[in-house]
Length: 313
Image 1: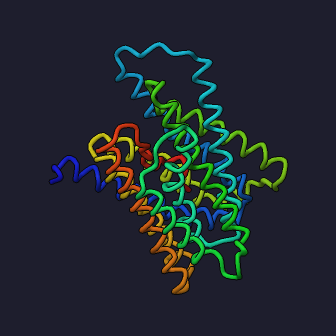
Image 2: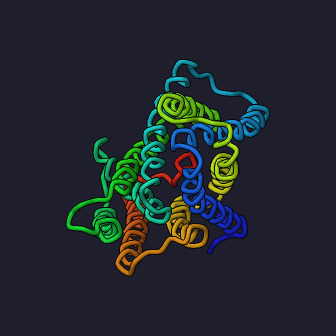
């Protein structure tokens, strides 16, 4: 039975899932005024700035910071930022050609991909995770493939991006154990992603003050709410919420992405697409359940970390 503290933590995680789900609609709206790299550059700049107060408070609270190599810290932040840039770019470009709801569900597949990629590190993947992956793959087909085996351009880009999100989760899991201040690592990777996005934007897109002003609300939502507020909620809530519960609650962002697309953008899904969404969601839950059961009964099983805010819109 959940304690009041755990229940409060799970409610905070639910709020974070709502913010991240609706962020897909904000990303889509932002594309009406600026290019995908301009949008990403602006929102990740805001996201990095939003973490500065947390970084300052964390340093004040730390009594004796553990010695660490500045070179290793910068190297970890650079590598994480590069992977984040790849995932965010593929998602943002892909969302131009697909709906917010479909982008949310396809991106959510990284929850299933994480333990599968863990095989590359010799980690064990539970049978439930394989079953969840099969369900998710069938659901993905029903949701995105409408003509034979042809995957729509936008859906394909978002799907490739999901593999980068999964790689990013595994990378952050390895790096976070080496640093006392995970917020600093997050701030570094956001900064790297912002700089790379702005460089590409200046080279390939028309960046105008008028466009940025018109896209101000979607950019503010993506930078401050999605990255700043939701990230803070996740960090605070996961201190008390069971990891498996956290992962399942945060995966609800896919449902809220569809809801946001329907409410804000008048997007609709066919019965086939809705059935595909249901299978994908069931696959995500089954995968997480299998990981949790295996982790509690077998040593060395791969545990998929709960989703992190840096991959949200």
